[in-house]
Length: 293
Ligand code: GDP
Ligand code: MG
Image (cartoon, rainbow, N blue to C red; front, side, top):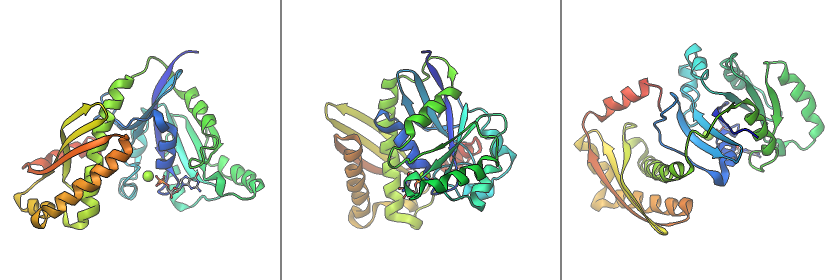
């Protein structure tokens, strides 16, 4: 069988299970790679490599999987066009539910690229005979390439979905090497985890413009040594992050380390500090205007 490869976007209103689906599709084969995609305008959020195909999942400007509120602001043709260079779009909805917010996403679907309708949370439908009329109803809304009911959480019908996705990829060698993916993935995840802890522990106190840079990431057998800098715009933001007697920063570090150990299944030594980088917010704006998150 020929090797296939390509880009896949997952879209849908919040809470339909896009993240769950992505996680289950990439599973152990995982990899979340760097924010900076080399070959598309999209941010790569995960890669699955099988013997016969490589699936590169991307996040799409305006369809952000984590910041869905953007949908309300940038709903226009540009959003649709941003989908045009992927090989296939997965439009995810919930079983037995199709509302106004689903319609809004539907209106943005591209006509020049196959769209597979994924009806998720199949496990929540107690009487499966209810499903058929529902499928009939939604099937007329758009020329879907296929309609596949799944349960992302229970891994039901996911092999069928993967086969369907593969049909829409193009023939070609893998774009990413597996080694490269895994290494970058842990480093990327480490930064995401620290960033998440900062927001979880400081919330509104901290401007959205902070970022995390992994300055060093060392692999030593079963140990990972991670050196992370939290980057703020101004000196005045530093004490907020550090806290009284350094307690905030310590808490950020402790919680982040625990999450990393669990995720990597490795021992983690983590150092976190705060750095001021003036002009960073402007850099971020520049990045955003390129369509990256
Ligand atoms: P997203 O906002 O579209 O990314 O949705 P999430 O992946 O965060 O999922 C939203 C909620 O739906 C979470 O509580 C998931 O556990 C749940 N969920 C996702 N997939 C399934 C499924 O197949 N069955 C059930 N019962 N719940 C699911
Ligand atoms: Mg999500």
